[in-house]
Amino acid sequence: MAEPTPVSNGQPAAPAAVAGQRPVGLVVGTVAASPLEFSVGVAADQFLQLDDVVVTRRKLPDGAEVRIAGVVTNVEAGHEGARFASDVFLIEQGALPAEVSEVAEVTVTRVEPEVYVPPRPGTAVDRATGEERDSALYFDTMAGAKLPVGLGRDGLPVYLNFEFVDGTRGGHVSISGVSGIATKTSFATFLLHSMFNSGVLAGEAHNTKALIFSVKGEDLLFLDYENSRLTDEQRARYGLLGLPAGSFRNVQVFAPPRPGDSSGTPDVRARDKAVSPFYWTLAEFCEQELMPFVFADGEDERSQYTMLIGQVAARLRRDHQKVGRDGAVQITGADPGRGGQLRSFEQLVGLIEDELLDEDTRRDWVAGSTSTGSVNAFLRRLRSAVRPLSTIIRSDLADRGDRSLSTSQAQVTVVDLHNLPDRAQRFVVGVSLRQEFRRKEEQGTARPLMFIVLDELNKYAPRDGDSPIKQILLDVAERGRSLGVILIGAQQTASEVERRIVANCSIRVAGRLDPAEASRPEYGYLPPAQRQRATIAKPGTMFVSQPDIPVPLAIEFPFPAWATRPAEKGPWTGVDDGPAAPADPFAGLDTDDDPPPF
Image (cartoon, rainbow, N blue to C red; front, side, top):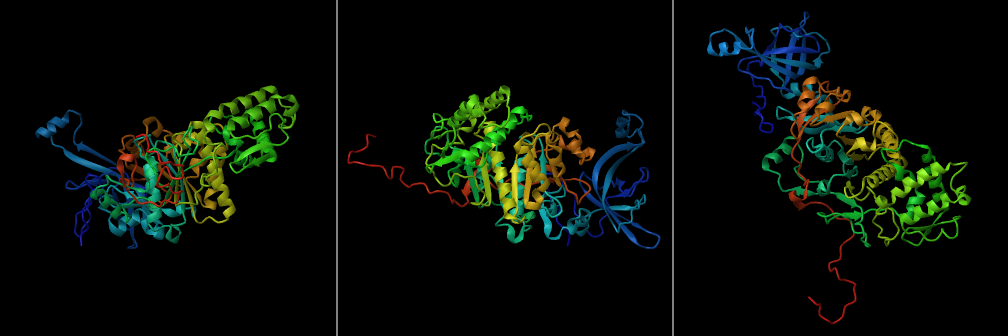
């Protein structure tokens, strides 16, 4: 029975092969063929487009047959017999004889058996369908590790080998593209949806976790809402991939407290379910030695003053005493006039300033002879952090018991950062990554997996300079897969990300690229034609490179089945394990018999 002709996003798809169908073309003899590349003269009643999968065969003298399969990486059309550009007018008028020829360039992806001989000129070339297509793209070798990532230009599913994602044979994913056009975060969340629902995680799917940092608006806060704009045609695309067209089911959102709100209400506007505030108390700041992350910005070149950071952090850990249940502290050994109860980050910074500027008490905080210039530089940077960090480092709120960032409450944890200043965003990312990485180290087993989705990777792990966040991300990239910590990093410019992080990503994905960025060596995995295509790619089109397949595959992933903005919010499908809101906002207040004045 013939396969139906698929259609991909309104574009003409390659017709499926049927019994007795004519070959799509012949191997040309005017261009030398090699075991790794050959050209196809396209038949007059056929066509080949970029990314089509084709197959040809060659008989050996001993009677054995070699099957040579590949992917179309370029197609050219021209007039044979024309000498000048103006000849096209004469040819169209019938005054000059000439023939139109189309020649497709094919990059070989697989040879079975592995006898590397070139195909002979004049040999028939067919479209690869069914088992031949699976063989050409190595899908037949993936077995239970086939992770659907989108539809190819032929309208059929394209798969990743999950063993190169989960740490078995490799790990980590790098996604590059222009902001707002390349749909990097949409593809990252689709990748998570596919992993959770495709069966590649088997019985581990329920316990597998994902930690997502949301840095651009509230778009990622509605993963557990159905997308009201999803059409039947788009739902059918999920069906082709064997995935449910639904939202995430178990999502917990953390957001910083609203500035000036004494109750610690999360600073979100359009979400009111399964959302909790997050902040660190002064006691936690001292106990966990979080001081280095106050200085975790991209401009930090590890100057002389940075030696003081660890010394001050160690002193705070050693000499702090927790006061009460809300995380307030007092520092023992400090000057009696300064060592009272501290409830705000500004008060803690003020104490450190007074202690370090006093020559009599400075020696208790920093070892050896420290120049006044280094102390002043340290204090200047510390003082500049008071305003951005005071919202998330505090002890002036009553203990709620639900304000610690944790991935244990849900399958997908979203940390909303978009309302925080850049410096506070860096602090949250650094502390959270260190916490989760240490938790996985203490767990002692790689499974269940932990996926970390981080946009703007070039900001947190820049190629130049150093910072605590960069060191953690390097640790994740180099040791993470052995611990079950998998990074899905997104960035506008891979050329500005630390090389060792990109080099450790087995899967590389590119969406729409800036022309200047596309020419950088970091995109050497893209053939020249794909580099050029990436500069005009539309949203939803991605070029996916994986170690199994010699040529990156162009795919289109479905429109998100979950809401990506408030206007798309459909029915909520999540689970709310957070604190229950009181039914009556005036419950618990003293009342009298007087009627309200309104």
